[in-house]
Image (cartoon, rainbow, N blue to C red; front, top):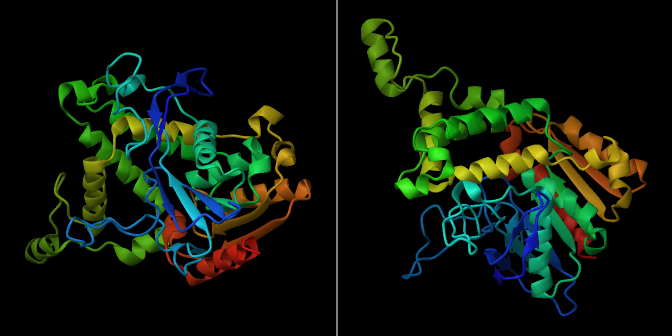
Amino acid sequence: MHFEEPLALTSGASLRGYDLSYETYGQLNADKSNAVLVCHALNASHHVAGVYLDSQGQVMPRSEGWWDTLIGPGKPLDTERFFVIGVNNLGSCFGSTGPMHVNPDTGQVYGADFPVVTVEDWVNAQAVLLDRLGIGQLAAVIGGSLGGMQALSWTLQHPERVRHAVVVASAPNLTAENIAFNEVARRAIVTDPDFHGGHFYRHGVIPKRGLRIARMIGHITYLSDDVMNEKFGRQLRAIAAEVGRDRAYQFTTQDVEFEIESYLRYQGDKFAEYFDANTYLLITRALDYFDPARLHGGDLSKAFAQAAAKFLLVSFTTDWRFSPARSRELVKALLDNQRDVSYAEIDAPHGHDAFLLDDPRYMAVVRSYFDKVSL
């Protein structure tokens, strides 16, 4: 969907002539009361469920929606009852206007000149799209991780437009440790010789080395120690194990010997093939900046005084990047304001990635809540 009207950004800049890519699932009912907005996390997109088919009607490889475990006919967020909308955030690299696109004011690719965007900017852009679709109020907004921050922000920026907010594996702001991980990943990208100050498009190159390292750092933080030990432990790759039998142990500086090394390099290589470096910088900065309590002297309870929605918050015990303690901070702030809050803390071993997985307890909690939303 194209928007010519300028969008004012938190930074003081504005965007005009921008596009938002989106997908919808299910049918909007007659009074437009069954719309659910799904907000995506760092490297996801508007493609939240289902698969794409090629021209012969065959399922395209790796085309499954990123939250397909949760969304679809008969699933916890049931598209036979709800009209589900996924929107790709501004600055991303999956169709919505971002650094890879041409600035209509200059005729040049934005590159590093794409303006800084915040969670609040994404919410305002989503609201403009919903206006165009004729949807005045959402039955619910749902998101995990960075998407959960967007769901929270919806209840503060447009409280009258949200009846329910489902916030999964998220937080009211990032800890210093989280910001540090993001900064190390960003430095890996900007110090790549192929980055060229963010204008690498002009040089016909991609800073893949930096992107690989950034993804490897991120991936470590998404998994729990238990999962990494269970999946990989100290297991050597087959070729390294063969060498080990012959030579007792062969120490190297460059070869991949442990299975965890191989896995991380695979994830890094795959990520570098499809994700944009400038987008990574923009989105991690948006994560860092989000802090609704900042304008209220750090008082989270005051920040949520204006929220009117009902809430479901879900956390996972082994998620150390967005720990249950952070969700409990949100629960307390909402209860301080006498808001209607449900909270589930799922004992799951999968770390932060648990919000993407088909854990039956987690699915049951979300299904039960959306049964209430549909009443």
